[in-house]
Amino acid sequence: MAPGLGRSVILGGQGTYVQLTSSGTAYNSITQIFSSNVTVQNLTVQAMNSTDGTTADTGGVKVLFNSGPTVTSGSGAVTVGNADGTGTFTQSSQPFFRYSSGAVLAAGSTTASKTWQFNVPTTVVSFGFTVFGTAQLPADSSVLRWVSVSSPTTQTLRAVRINCVGCPVATAWAVGDSGTVLYYDGAIWSTVTTGLPNIHKINLYALRNTGSAGLWAVGDSGKIAYSANDGVTWNYLANPAPDTALFAIDEVGSGADTLYAVGVGGVIIRSTNGGTTWSRQTSGTTDTLFKTGGPSSHDVYAGGQAGTLLHYDGTTWSPDLTGSAASLHDGDGAGDVNGLTDLWFVGTGGTILHSATGASGTWTPQPSGATQDLFGLLGNHSLYVSDPIGKTDVFAVGSGGTIVHWNGLAWSPMVSGTSANLTAITFGGNQAPFIDWWAVGSGGKILHGIR
Image 1 (cartoon, rainbow, N blue to C red):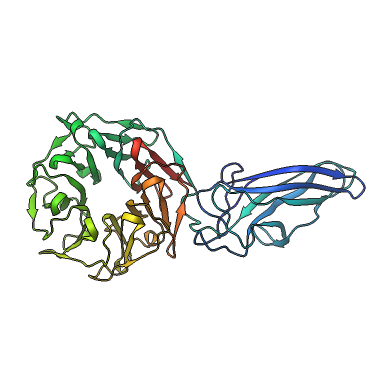
Image 2 (cartoon, one colour):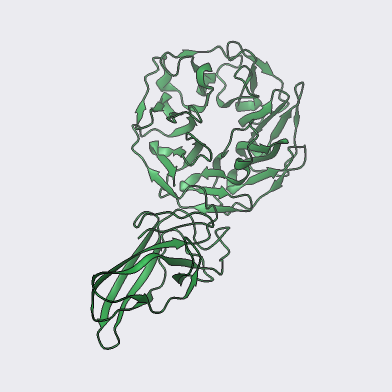
């Protein structure tokens, strides 16, 4: 039996996306009714029969007959005896049974039993059919399963990045505590030996990759670890703010020349030559900064402790009022043909701040549905690339295995299957839309988000 999910897609996979279970199967030779009690279990990580994860749709979860019933031995014809209705799904006039009408079917939940009846003449020995399922989903084109994959470490992982979006094989990197560096070759994750002195004594908090331009990782003691050749050889780069823990690094613009890193005490450092040399900038704050990034060298953001948000216009860093006292741990943006149009920052207590323009003072809170701290945020795009897909496919991750998703209308929770603190998330794949997500966290946890 192959379930179909979403408003516009049909998917197969009994035991993968749904589980149909029958019981009490019986045949009455007098009435010639074959009957069975059938339940539907939601095996996806999203709520079914809802567009926002909370409000139920009246359409319910429909189990429709894609083919049959067809007599496979004996003679005669079999028909569905008590369908809840007929409709056009994969073809016209398909009978269906409706479940959970007016109720949300949460991830992992099972519907009440419904009796299916078939009109079966006594001349029929056996018959068969295939069914699909269809239901409203909060994110009908996004992740349907989060799968825990084997990790080569038990160290907390702090950052993860896809190495090449659009490549035939989407490789990836992750970094974390005690100098941990991992590489994903498209099949398995493995530990990378950097050969850097005392790397095991520092925690690495952030990672930035720019394809052929190299890899940067930052962490405790102001360390900037760099590899110019995809992790084969690593070196430390000189930092004008030594012994200051750095929590974020990012390139700005469409090239790899201009980089920013931020950290403890409001430290902001910049490189305009691909990380070869760095200079310290005046941030105007002593609050610790956890995130930086932006669409261009004259449009850069840095977020941090107690709601601190700074904006750089190419000359000066200045405060951007958010109206929030939550610490901001991560941020991201999305755009369309008109350029960058949406920005988000996430932080403590499930805080999500949104600006539709990025202009100072335009930040508004969005209900996340979460009370846990949020540490990672990413849309289905790059921060500096105009991509309207990202405006309707944004993820935030946090403590206790929290994953929430923005579908362009509302944030809704996803079941991660873990209680580990999730610290970062990234996406990849070899064609848009990218349904290939990675989330990492405490204890070396690695989750793979797929359809």
